[in-house]
Image (cartoon, rainbow, N blue to C red; front, side):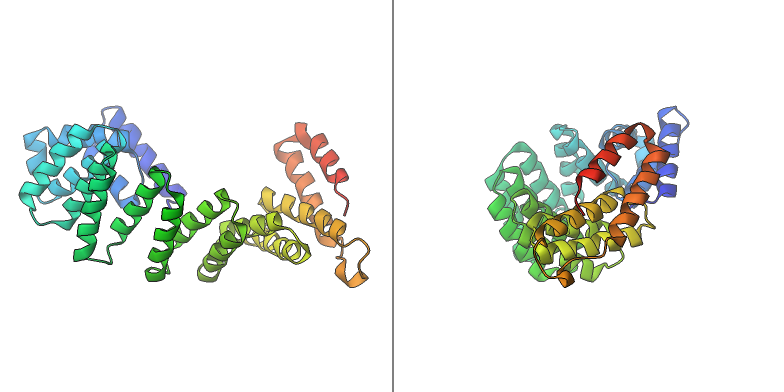
Length: 300
């Protein structure tokens, strides 16, 4: 994840290059270091360096890294001829490179040559079955073709090997949510919370899924995870505050006619409602009336 300082540094350098102040190579290096996608800028400034023999030769071994960076940016910009030219140069320099082979597979994907891309990736996996990038490319390819069931199968197989890949768990959870497979999505978020218990996003997403599932036990657990989200964000997550109120209202409805021990203290939802009203007064005073009306309609 890019920090605010790094984002500021990147934007400042980008503005400098855009305004003719130099620093194109430094900008390209920073984009690569931060692993962000600024494809149009990378394509523009990277290609200008590659097309200048003097600037290109000054890069030394980094020249080949730039060819790869520009090739990927060109794919994003749908400039497939440029990608093809970059791959040709890299293949000539590194004829047996698996990394260049991946680029060629990505080019086949961009052309819509799915079967050829699959053959290329399968061949590369035969040489190295632990190549994470290729496994992920196959998932992306399945999604691009609308084959969601295959994407799920590939992701599950991938996670059997690379269980610590948080991005893959999130991707799988998002797919399950899109298919309304909430129990499976809940499992994914449980794995994420176990591995990264201090990330509020996972607590919030897990609470959302449990609230959607409904039922007294799920609602009570959802409320706890909304509360933990508030705790991890210093009380500044509006969605989690709303979640507390919604869960409390739903629990009150489900608990009607039950024993007193099934009912909850109104203290937490009162604190959440107060925090919401304070937040709206500071940031959206014009909508305070709508908030008050919404909170009144919830029966705690």
